[in-house]
Image (cartoon, rainbow, N blue to C red; front, top):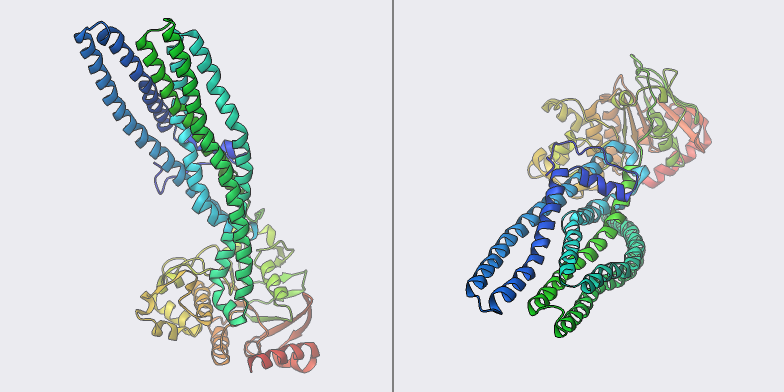
Length: 577
């Protein structure tokens, strides 16, 4: 199977069928071995009625006990060997499926990493979770066709050839009857693809809703909105259940026909063979052989139907994976280097300029407007922003990520010890964590600047205390300060922080504002906020109206000269009270 650190290769994303074929081509030796073992196993199943017929016609009927013993021993030997083949076939196909499983997981995870900050903009969390939880297993199961599927075809042709030597009429019935069964099941498989696709789409929506509900349950409880989300979840789950019933209805027909039609076919062929034996056209041994051949064919036909069912579901899952793999990260056409010295960041769309070495605050009645400005300045959204007069899209994206860090107040927090959380990636939207392991003094300084010392002191094992995914075992304010610790520990040239103190009480917020300015002395820092406690510590405050720069100055100056700003800040003071 694929090694955990092995390159999974370049997937074929031209379609679901091509992706499945790529998984087969990635393991040609194992796939061929599975097909050979599956074919040999099924052909030797057909050898059992042949040997039994020989034992009857050449041993039992004429009373030749030596011949009967010889054919009986051959029957035992073939059966024992076939049992070993069955074990090897199962082991080989398990490896084929597991390789497909792990390979798909690796390409999906690799694509998620490749998309980076663009992931949440390109697709929902529910889509990714559905792929990882369900589609990967479904795709792996579809590769069963490589072994038993090929073996079923070989066994079918082998039995047909054996029947030609017994009766051309029986051979014709078998050659025409089996394809007829497959044709009858075919429309149900096509319908299954449609219903399964709709089911998977609804499953992705419901999974995303579950993730949202789990992440915001505490907030929903406080706002009294839990019932609204619960009603939406109930409605979506009912739709998913109804679609699941539709999938189950089609599946039941596929499985019923897969078992019922071969059994009916077996009865028809057995009746024809009995008539031929009664008329003396075939021997009793040949009658037994014909019954055995057709009984053996029930297995291949069932495998065909099962493989058709698995392939139908596998193609649906593969199309979802292919759709995800086709997503492209933020385009990077940059060829120029970042400025060698601290320089001005300018956003022409809003008129905002961030002067180097200063702490700038962006205030607006609509927080989304100021957040959008920082998105453009960090090049997380299309923009005409410039850095030292050079358009950001002309600068290499890795260099932008190295120098400019966007600290989102809702960024994900991964599970692990607190030490791992503040040192690891994922707390900010920056692509890279700080180079090398930060020293103990650096960690302590970042904790102090973010007023997070009490968090460490309040946990049972300090920095080694376990933190849940999204830090759900911490309060909202604690999570916000931990995110700020991570941002300060990265020590970027330019720090862009979105509402870094929105969940803090007034006393803690004032301390964070004071210490943040001290910790970032001489470096470019921009924060979005309407809190006077933070605005008062900024070197420059930029007041935006409808996303455009309306006034610039210190907090005290704008309070005196700008009525709109004064009303905005006064409202925030009332909220704080």
